[in-house]
Image 1 (tube, one colour):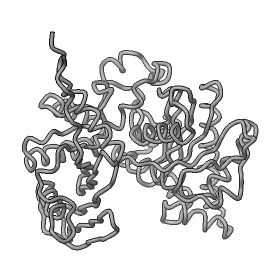
Image 2 (tube, helix red, strand yellow):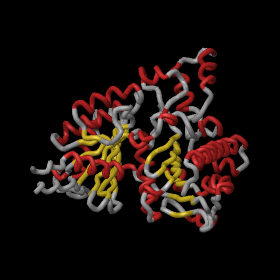
Image 3 (cartoon, one colour):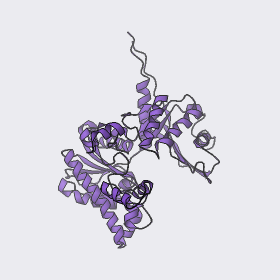
Image 4 (cartoon, helix red, strand yellow):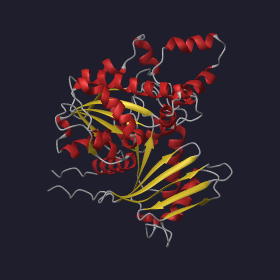
Length: 416
């Protein structure tokens, strides 16, 4: 008889460490309940601030004195066990920690338990994500120091997209550059796309393996993914998060010749990087000194030509990708809207779906107008292609992945 399977961890802390921030969410995973969440911002800078929110809505905000991620994590731990606002009796109740890691390169096709070798590969992948992987790794190491032997699991933004075929992920440059430098499409927002695909299947009462979905993660960063029976067929972001849709400050798809032209005009690589990643997209086109879609819509409705131009560029690029992915999938069951814009902007959803009539998707205006950050079908019942709003929850997905990985790694071998 085999030994009984180990009990899954119930109290899971999810950590997303940035260069000067540490986001956290404490979950009770057997109930999939958020116990507490928050962020420590401006770590190592003046006026470092903590925002803490408990499951019952009780909040705490204020400045804290921390010099690094270890210090920020210790402050978070103090709040989690605080007698007045805490959610744990003692810190040892934390049974596992899940970490968002942006880039897993070609090595990681799935979430994985952190080891010395895993940390080395995350560091190597920093060449592909220099702004994200180093602080992600720093968050892991901070948790190792603060929590000791509590297991850590790395959940990669790129992992869900590794089912793409070579026809999708390779670039049409000499193959040796892929072999030597790993130049290929990796895709991002994978944790969100995976959560939304699974949640949509549950919402429709169908197995994910029976569905073909086009998931649209629309926020300041935006990406779109074609999912066939639970596997990614293609996605809009590439080797970096710069390609694809028009975003808040990123240009999305652009002729590579533009970059070469700018180089010949005397712009340095770092200047071009800042231009395309930080000064373009809605911010650059609308000229409002804002990348917030709500500001763009307000200005467009007020007759601002540049804002109108930015708005329709955003819609045009998104619709172009939906049409392409519908063709690649040989038809689809649903287009799914998620992310800050996708979940909350009936205005954008209406303009996108209006362009999808040729695919058999017809908007239910009344339903769409009333939907705000909740799951709903916003197309008419007779629509061949459904339009669905589905809130994402990347933190919960990381917690689920953490439980799954640890259960899989701790299964006992059957006795002979």
